[in-house]
Length: 265
Image (cartoon, rainbow, N blue to C red; front, side, top):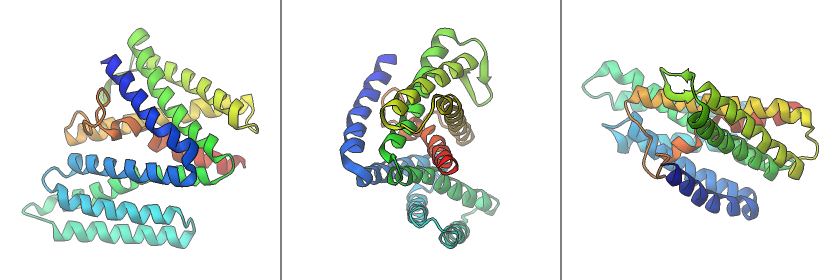
């Protein structure tokens, strides 16, 4: 299993890194678009197993509204997007109420959750468009992926104390500490290569904060999978499950990074 995970990770990096390096802002947009579509397909299978085609159409349309709003980040546009999504979710739930009307509110909430959750990936193009954007995008991915990798190997080697067994029985406090350590080292390397304004103190503060955010994102996805009664979001990545299983930490780290940039710039 470990070899399979490493092979899948290497293949993923071989695809993602050239696009990020040479593709510019449009490359990030393309990656976000493709990744979001795949993740929405996976989410629709988890959240709406009995009505997947219609749910997927609604999820894709709602994600598009969110993504467009992200590129016009004014209060009216964000409020307008929220209003459209709320009306859409309630309308779809009303028209697709089926035989069990008691589940209608749950269906509406599942739709909004999926759109908002996967819509968090749209923070990446915003980050890329700003100062030192490429380095910051790499920071997001390095912290997310090294945090996952460090937690996995440290947990296997030293894990003794369960982190949150009700949600994710295999995660340990020792693994979390290993992930935070490796993610912080990775952020230090990125800062030395591409973020000259970031001090060592900034790295020591931001690295653990972002990695903790990634751990929470991972736990949140585990909670949803348990709630939906599935083991993995999909099967697209051998050893990892679905694509959503692989980027769950990125979905939390990206907005946290954007917020840090806004506060410190």
